[in-house]
Length: 92
Image (cartoon, rainbow, N blue to C red):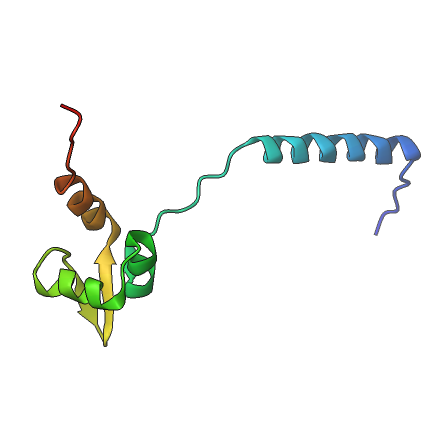
């Protein structure tokens, strides 16, 4: 295995490259991944509703859902759609 000698100039150059890369990472905003499907607890937090209200929204057909193995999933896009469809604009 060949041996290479690292000089202090090499270390300074490495440090500057590393600092530039870190600055670039910090300045680039990171978009959080939007989940496709949400569980009941996440929907309750998002809509600021109680478990009973969420159940009522399911029963009366306001929020579409899927149940898999006892876990209820909601499509995040469907929730957004329901919110927009029920929007009331009083700025007349």
